Length: 188
Image (tube, rainbow, N blue to C red; front, side):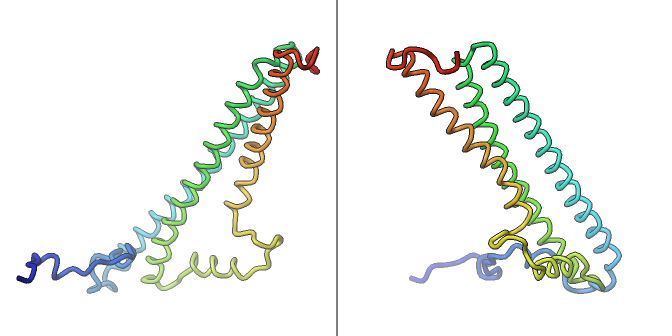
């Protein structure tokens, strides 16, 4: 016996591109240009706000890392190097968190600009889409560089590497001093 499908399943074929359903109706689209433009302005404004939030987030993480470096320096200068691995571990988590937020903001902005570009197709001028295409044709200073996000990720990844290596080396030194393998702490 053939399987019975509901009327909804028969009528709506599955689509994988959410942008296909961006516009509710194709009819009377010319009469709604003003409304489409208002929504377009809203999306551009939201994309700008996300970029501003992204910059503020980066400033926060730069400040947090600066604080961690100062804390490490103070601990070493006061002979409290035993506590430094904890600060380095915090640095590892801060760097991972920063890197993940950069990826989150990249994905969020990419989605917003896909919608903006789709809306532009219904407007007389496709400024942002054209600007984006022009920027892709410009000569890149470094091969393999894919945009701001790839540059932005260098710092948290570098800090993560530095904190991790520092944590491993300092922990090994402290373990060797505690075990008596090394007679005196090299930091004293």
